[in-house]
Amino acid sequence: MEKFFRSDKELEDDILIHTGKLQRNFSELNAEVRRAAKTTLPDILLKSRIISTLPSKYFEFKGVWESVPIEERSVNKLIERLRLIEMRLPSKSSDSTALVAIRKKIFKKPERKCYVCRKPGHLAKDCWKKESKPKVEGDAFVCTVEGVPKS
Image 1: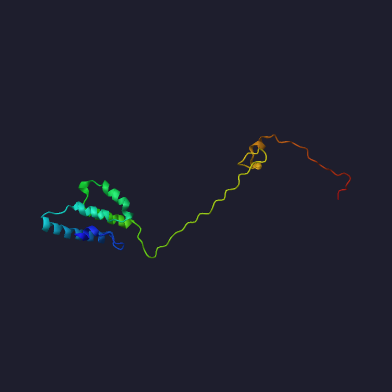
Image 2 (image 1 turned 90 degrees about the horizontal axis):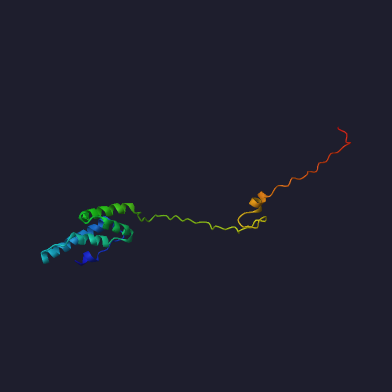
């Protein structure tokens, strides 16, 4: 009787082995109750024990199982769904490798002010105020030399 209520999932056991142990302990407990009290235990006791002994990685499954209608919940369906979840979960193997991602520190450039309009966020070469000023047309210095013979 005590085995059923004290058993926990061993790390090396998969779901099938764990639920098999619980089912065996439950049937032994049920036989003992049948002899002593001439009654049987409900299956919900076994289902609850299976759910309560699941490790934390099955946390989401517990919520999903609660959403299954009560009349559709059976021990076999519970074990079947747990096996499907177990196959999807990543397995822990001894030759696992770790991926480490290192992100470079981002250095912010100091906020520079424009020398034309004195506003931050751009430089003088990109200043909008500079472009709006009319461009000054100037004279060019031209030089000609006279009296030099052509060769």
